[in-house]
Length: 92
Image 1: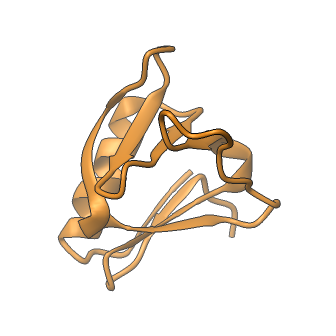
Image 2: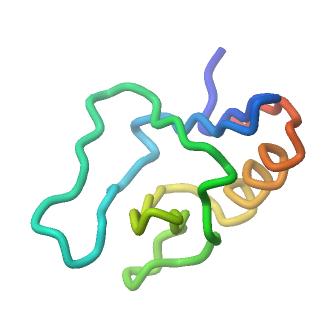
């Protein structure tokens, strides 16, 4: 089944690789690489959801990484809320 974001009952968020713009840690030499696989993150490690300096929807992680995505804020917020509530949901 096709999805942009998918949440699990374990509190994980799957982000389709083509929706990820960049994964970076500010003030580091290089960002992390996405190799065509879904990016899986734990909702409990997300500090907050907002926009980065370029205006992209971004999950700001507790470990300092920023995951910028090409999707609407409402979709990212819905996925975060569902994952934190341990609800399985597919967002297309």
